[in-house]
Image 1 (cartoon, one colour):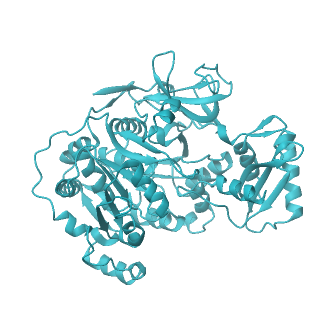
Image 2 (cartoon, rainbow, N blue to C red; image 1 turned 45 degrees about the vertical axis):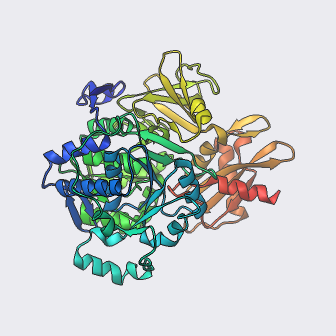
Image 3 (tube, rainbow, N blue to C red; image 1 turned 60 degrees about the vertical axis):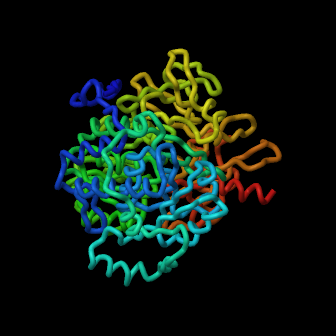
Length: 567
């Protein structure tokens, strides 16, 4: 057992213990221990179906035996390309049981991206879903994949629900060809294994358990190796903060290939003995339907999702009085959006507020969170239990005093083991400081005040140099999105004959706002009131929508590519 100090949390939460205990176990071991205590209680809910903890553990054991029968063992990698369906939970913990790495990828990834993931991790086995069969089957042979296990959305549904799915959404899914060499259906796969063998720990908690990929704003995302210890440290901290307990439920709409989804909505939820409500489709309609039918205790999402919910009249009619917590991560939560969502929660019966977090996949997900009742405008909160943060002079390990802007750094048990096949990038990101600790250099700009509150400014690489002056796109975007005529905004730097670079803003207007020169002039005037002159956009382009990454962030690199192509 390891213990994590709560540090700043003691100041804000008197009921959080001074030290949070992290079990010295693998992810599977902690889940199995919880399942033994929670037999007969629901663990996973999916489209009206429920799996109890003992049923879930039995399927994990069968799945582990089936992987073993296929030749998968300790240190092997298996690519998992699944939405939030029960199969993904079973597969991840089964692979952890036998010591294999779960390589988590987005089902909507392009064939080129999937080949990159396979080559980077050496995955010779893939678990995917039938609707993307053609894309996944193309990996066999040329990419070195030997076996493709094909799941189906209705695998865990009852007879009536299966039939209902088949005659509705299932009609658009092509049947998987039978008898194709190397292709195995989920049902056949689960029958392959012999009786589960007695458990013997194949790897230590500190060994790599999963590979997640960076957000996808670059052409080739980096593979990030995360250990069972990292996932468990996050879970222990979140359970202590939120008081998540058996009988509670968490709406798992954040995808399992994302640290937010796998680390918080699935792993943390299950080891706490709570129910993970799996939602396979990310969107406001499915979110509202789950709120109405499932009545979750805790909800989570990205800011764009909460913003979309507020635009839907049906959301305002949802009773959320049962909520015990609401969390926002993955991108900057504008203060105005937080206040509007908090007001909506209160009007709909909830006694909670939307808590903003900050984190990155290199430390599983969240490393800072705003304490309830202690929100500070513009801050992403304070370091979570077991996490230390500091600010250093960019490019160095020199720690800066409070309220001085620099690069945010993180240390603690949740840090990655490193980047897959990239020791140089790992050494650049994980650095040992003068205190003897290894710190994660985030590449993010920010500052920390004397009370430990973190203020995020933006990515270091996103700085726009205008006449030698640093402009932070996130700051300009936040201001633009506070204007009532702006739904969303993205700011990039473009070549400028006189200033080297200048600011260009891409704007999606709010419903009812008229895009054109008049609105562009109004927005520029608004920026002049609140920003230094170098940060005011010289050009504004209106769009019906902005390109998005697979995890719901605005893909600013796509806009940069468009502008580069014009030059």
